[in-house]
Length: 282
Image 1: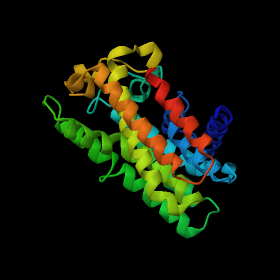
Image 2: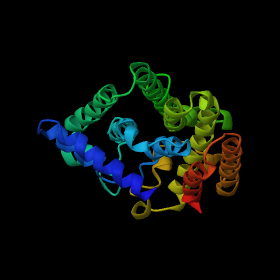
Image 3: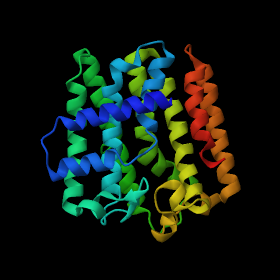
């Protein structure tokens, strides 16, 4: 997986090199290259590998997804949103370049992601399916809706069902899209099962973030901790406690694993990334 991540990083650098020099390009480059685990693009390529295809033909698809994810982080950190000053161990984009440039950098990544997909040599019908998946998952019926729900429910006592709804849209949709994009390329018949695997892992991932916000530190995470409390947000930890939250994480990852075994592919390649994510709080 580390070799694949290195290839993703190199390709992201090559993509950015094609744009004219500007402060916005510098900010895009800064945020993309600040670090990050590349979980979403890695999932895309691991799914493709699991079906025995040459993942290198599809690295640009994975990069497009990472560009969308990074744009969302830039905008999420803005003063009008979470107002964070640390991301991936470095000052957030707006702290480094100013708010206006950060907004434009996020916009640039959002817009260029679709161009990256359209410029590939894939069949037009597949390109459209991939673009639809990516922008539906990140748009007003996906991640953006989840961010809206998150903002609306600050300072409120929430039920587990409402928390799950927020996490499903804010985190689960885009993470599930990574599995779906892999399926669209490698095995469309398995799309629904891979979608459900993504939703379960997405919810588990967000619950882990709730736990880490309380138990970890900024040096380890690369972002400020205690932000949920500072922003008056209900989380799994405040609702269920750390121990019960971890039980939910374990249950979701176990369910995701069982769904993987129902597929005909190289199970080890998918289970490898599930195990990697599962150990985040271990």
